[in-house]
Length: 284
Image (cartoon, rainbow, N blue to C red; front, side, top):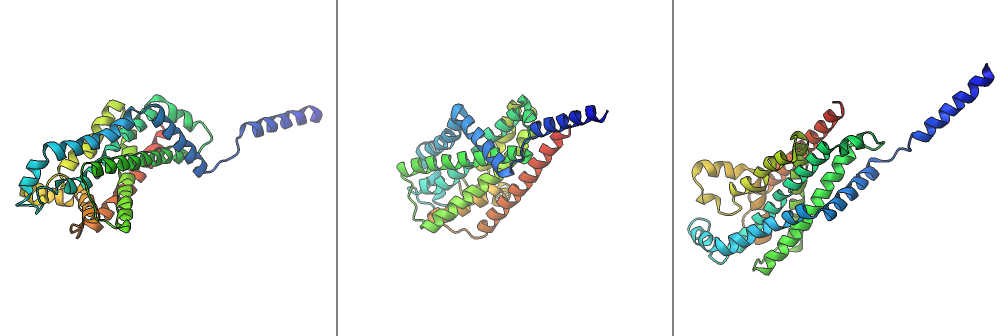
């Protein structure tokens, strides 16, 4: 009997060793997921084109169509000269470019969750958090490349900045902080909604509504009291006024620490929310 039992045990162990893959690190898995998302963005460029074109269209629209009226109205309220509106406008448009990244990220995560690719990933021997991390890092890279395009167009149509290199570096860090914060929030929202069509609606306030209820286009002093109180404390105004101060030399005041606080808080809450939803999905 012992002669029959021993080879069977040996065969089972060998099969087990063959089918258990070697463990890989979370960093390697995240890089693999990052490459997947960047390749997907390259092969299906519609979302990337939308990400770039929306802030550039808003920049051209408000500079050439509404710029004269806006700057004329700001002479008595915001202290901006009629020829300075492009300098006033560009920092806010850069933040709108960051906000526009919420839409493709939310739709992309929702599509992955509903079409079964994430369910397939869960069956594979990879680190689960790397699926979300790869998606988030890819989205931040796309957003920062969009900002480079927007800055290039802004300089072509007349934007000028007296910022020193350290102020440009601080501006890049501020934009990356906001992009990271909104991206993690978008990753969570993408898991929360049940269809890509609904995902686009959920992302709308971050890419379109909140910028108009801030100092992106007009000074806070020109707003009615109830709206000004909201606009003074919402994240877009804090980031816009801080970036405007870094790039054009206006007063930053309390908006600097407020912007950093908003960025860190949204990034942390978005990350924890996204991770919680992903773990909950694995137990369903």
